[in-house]
Image 1: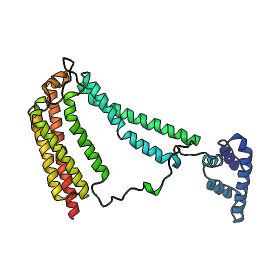
Image 2: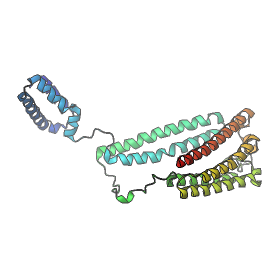
Image 3: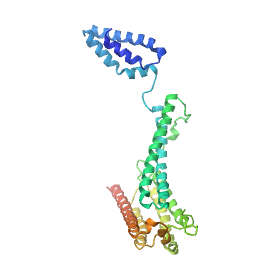
Length: 315
């Protein structure tokens, strides 16, 4: 045997269990010799045949892993789908939730300018921590061959085909869920905004005077929007009639909000004065501008997007 083959054997045996090295060395050396003899019979010289055989066998580390029945992936196919589902679930809401909470805490401490940055930073750190620890746990499960006792896949898990629908059940449930939360929050913030007033009581975020008309009106618009979501789901796709109703409801909500925020009637004056940062005219103006531009852009995007989808259905 030449030095090249000896070096290949040494590199392979370093990564296999010690109690199997002699057995594997004998088996592998014999295989290499047989493969070299086969190539020499085809007319190749010893050096060329040896190099071709070792190249065909591949990386010694990979060959050693096959002998030792050791996985070379961090998370293999047995656990990958479970890992992927859990990662998507946790990353879908936990980082955002942590970011919002941290931002609110910073703002309540009077650090309004740094609240957004602190929230984003906390959300990113939370996402990194989730990714690291979940991956670590599954990597350990992979190495220890621990069974998750997950139910076996059956054809009953196949979902209904919605490829011909523009409006899926997931879209509808998500939209209705969001609308319900907004509708519920409007009265809740009046009684429980988690912002204490000077006397220790609750401090509403929105101006209580709006309950005379505008807040009930906006809630009615949101309830009507839930009806639109149901109608969209039943139709399965956007129609021009639905586009018109959607535009009317979008404008019925956005126009009053833009008017109220631009005339300083949306936020509770006591709430504004509660925060030193927000009570400055320049900072309040920045918040008003941000809310107004955001509302206008979201409204325009929703109307245009629905019109484009309806147009595509007809062409």
